[in-house]
Length: 79
Image (tube, rainbow, N blue to C red; front, side, top):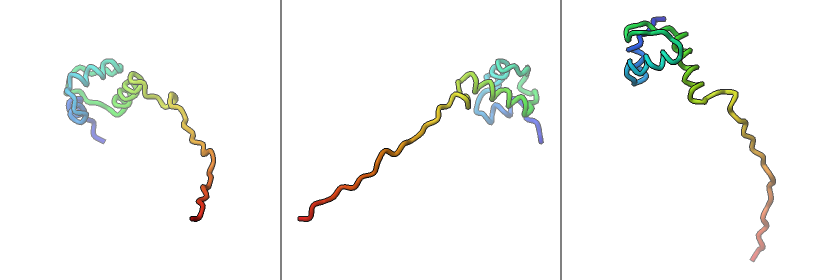
């Protein structure tokens, strides 16, 4: 598996490398230049940080249940 650079990953995400470097820095991934290599672990760390900061968590989801109340027939009078 080939490692990607910060610049390549930024172009995949349609972001500038500077914005991605700021996000990586806030996630705790130490990258200083757009030519630095990113591992899969770095990407997972960034994803976990972004999900936590935007409030998307699997434990926070509520379960939705649908209840079918009743079924009835309407009789039509013959004319």
